[in-house]
Amino acid sequence: MALSALQRTTFLVALAGCSTAAAPFLDSGTGNEPPPRPDAPPVDMPPPVDMPPPVDMPPPVDAPPGIYSHTVTIDGVDDFTAVEQFATTSNGFAARVTWDATNIYIAYTGADIVPTTSDAKQKWLFAYVDTDPGAATGATESQTYNTQKAKFPAGFGAEFYARWRCDATFHTLEKHAGGASWSTTGAVPPASQVGPYLEFAIPRVAIEATGTTIGLVTWMINEKPGVEGTFAGLFQGNFTNGYGAAMQLTKYLRIDLTSQNPPNDPGNVAP
Figure 1 (cartoon, rainbow, N blue to C red):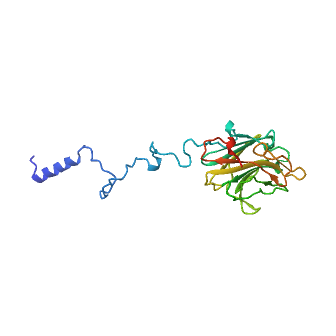
Figure 2 (spheres, rainbow, N blue to C red; figure 1 turned 135 degrees about the vertical axis):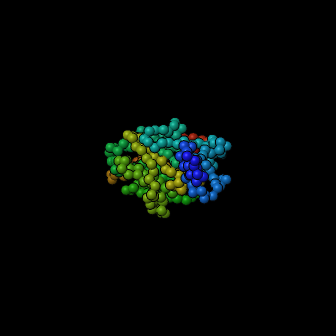
């Protein structure tokens, strides 16, 4: 039967609707988006902060090559090297000191570090810091514990000190508040004690140390009435162990953050 012109048109349209050809790809946009900016990064590009630095980037200004630096992990394991170890005023006690661009690291070994030692709640380890040695600033003597205190060597004035009580329940960072007054800061030095070994770090930012030299004195006390005493001071011969109503310290460690010399170099002993 012959088809009219209208019927032929309808038939062709129907055939076109049944085509099995793949539909054209359509994106998820509306068709009205502006063209992408030429400087827009591809969506799979990592953010700039994750990109590695150029290979020719200079080292940080506070850690140039050749300057002495050693980072210690505060985990109760002795990572200090031989050039970072010091004799003290007491046999059986040794000190360790080192530093990097971020922290001053201090460690002690000795029987009184063990929390079960006798009088542990009355025994302390102190580390006093002078952030600008020789500048005639800071405290000229330590805080008094019971009836004991220390007088600092010539050229040393303390702005901060870290303290550790030997029962291992209490340690803080103190700041000089003028005269004989000290106040507890909000910074608690990271510390770890295992057996007769104690190590802790004093962040340089916490002691507001912006210069190139730092002074350090350390020692221990027993503040128990009737048996008060000062002992285990950094540097053999720094003072004579015993009761110290005003124990005169004669030496301090002068940390030169621009030097290649290791911590126990004789040139670091001051004054």
